[in-house]
Image: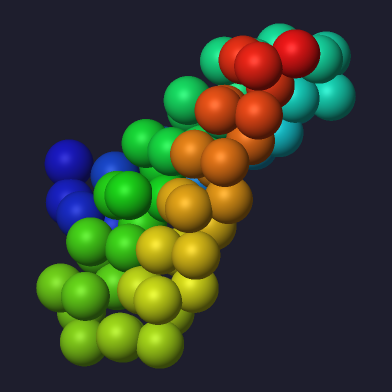
Length: 72
């Protein structure tokens, strides 16, 4: 499997994370944390720092969502 193919799997996993959040499952945030971390790393690897920063921000929001949902 090439890195490009792996990123398609990461994208599919991110969609599953969105579906889990629609179903009001906290685990959707955990999936998003993983996929955003992988996407940020990939973007840094291919030389796209602005895109990596965006995924880093998404990672922070996913952590905030996980933490906030656990408090309720």
